[in-house]
Length: 223
Image 1 (cartoon, rainbow, N blue to C red):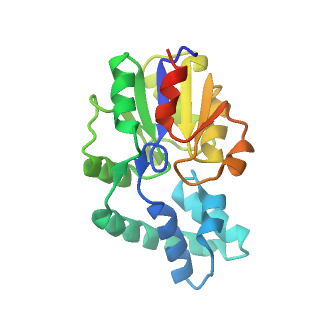
Image 2: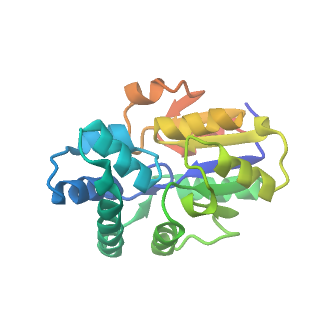
Image 3: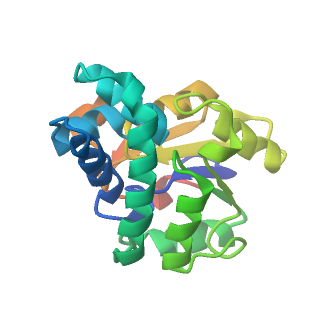
């Protein structure tokens, strides 16, 4: 059991089930530009990254022209907005209750994401999740100058709630980059979940403290 005061939770794949729509849209946007990349490749390269950086890294990885990245990113952003309007977005099983439980125990819950704030807000509106009910703050790629695995988003979350000791912070996510972000911040607990982008064997590479099917299982180890 671990004393945790702040939970920093990734969004898509960790708290929210959006059927990997973001990575499918990355794949389609890159392929619309004349490339030929699979969803598996996108998931293994891009999971957890800020999305312009993800597309740039993916192009480098497949021997493409990284100068194409800004144009593909623009295309991707428009496509994703449209896809999310039509998508049935739901919480990952047990997660909504977990968030309410954590907050009822006076723990702070911060949602953090490599999305822009506009896209993150679109997801939250679909779920009808409200600040001060389901979570205490939202921190997105727009709020920081360095994207994950930089610990900047976690450090900002700690600052918001006057938490100076990273050992009372839990970071959870569905990608290696989430776990690296948590370790870079010195978090007391890093939890990888199997509800999103990456497999157990991929997640193991980042040496999280725990690998759970879903973040709701963390309730058993937090006091």
